[in-house]
Image (cartoon, rainbow, N blue to C red; front, top):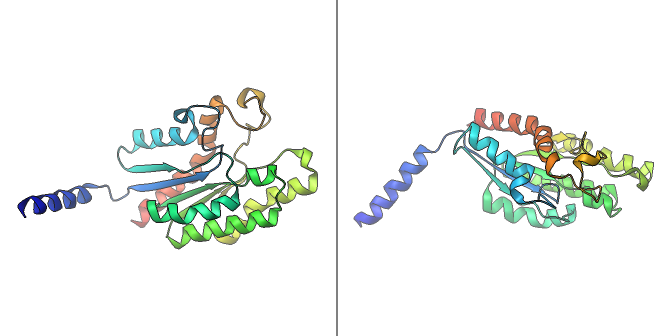
Amino acid sequence: MMTWLRSVGALVFCLAMMPASAASILIFGDSISAAYGMSIEQGWVSLLSQRLEVRHPGQHKVINASVSGETTSGGVRRLPALLKQHEPDIVVIELGGNDGLRGQPPAMMERHLASMIRQSRQTDARVILVGMQIPPNYGKPYTQAFAAVFPRVGKAEGAAVLPFFLEGIGGVSALMQKDGIHPNAKAQPKLLELAWPLLSAALKDQKARK
């Protein structure tokens, strides 16, 4: 009995000592966030975790649930279990690129993204939608329709939006892998800098609410 009471007391003490501003961040993406073609430690998500640990030791947890090749269709199916398991404060949705590369209808992608944003917001999580663009060889009408989805669905569903995650990176050979699709290790700090303003704002908002 005393052992049980001591265990409960230790748990209560640990919970009491947790920073009130502590936040968990779920990164829900595809190969861009899964560090395709390099060690996971080199990827922008790991760099984010390292930055947060240096600036706010022990206060934030980053969960990388990104899977190479993931589409918005797969994301809609996978996300509910992850939200239930991790109960994140912030959800970063970085999906859609593979939909475009496969020529999927932008309207279908938009429905899936809207569904994932709503699922996340129903758990009171703040949502950041990370957009993508596809090569011009898919034709101007399709590439324009594809790119327009992210700001439109973000505005409609109340998510912060980064319109193009490879801004200043895509098409720059020194920052891309040989396939011309995936950013290399040199590009990872740049990806973090592109995502950081929205992440920082979400963390500040989360802290203010607590």
